[in-house]
Length: 114
Length: 117
Image 1 (cartoon, each protein chain N blue to C red):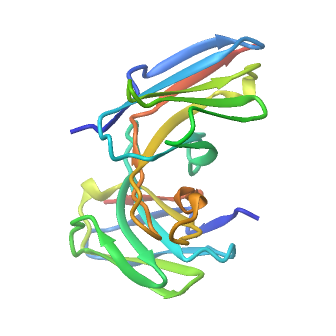
Image 2 (cartoon, each protein chain N blue to C red):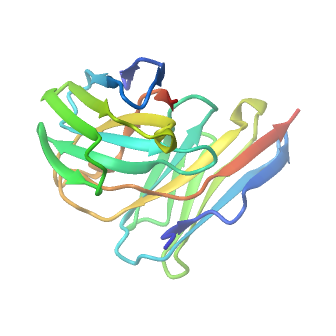
């Protein structure tokens, strides 16, 4: 049972435009959400996160939006740059104390065309 | 410094070999994790250590044996692996402070690419 889903396996965007990556989840116990970026043969790099008590978090070119009623979050990248080309994973967690299991989505491959 | 290091970068081993993967972090994090990632799939959690004690084992076969010698080091001992165990093995760490929002944020190493022949 896939609790975190990224329904778009790939996305292609022109440099300078907005990239929007989407993620849906099913478990209402999730209270923290994260986005990771992954290049081939490297570990995932933490990008940005959001707590369930917020609906938006912004960090430079990256903004994450959370719609709890729809169990949906999205990552906006503006403006997109060729170096942003990578696989993006969303991840969700339910509070478990000092350690928290992250449940990852299946990933979206973003290609930013120069 | 948000660096997690892993050695070796690549490992090829036979099904009768014994080998170990190593992970190190110097961020003062108290929680450390092992993940397995197959091609075109998301990372799957294997083990979690909290304050050097094993807190989560995701029903991983006993041919994988984790060890946390101290708060900065995490090992994964491998014995009698199968070809289907070939994957990218990722180590991660997080602050591990209960009640702190950033305890959710896990920082990953570059991984060890394991091939079992």
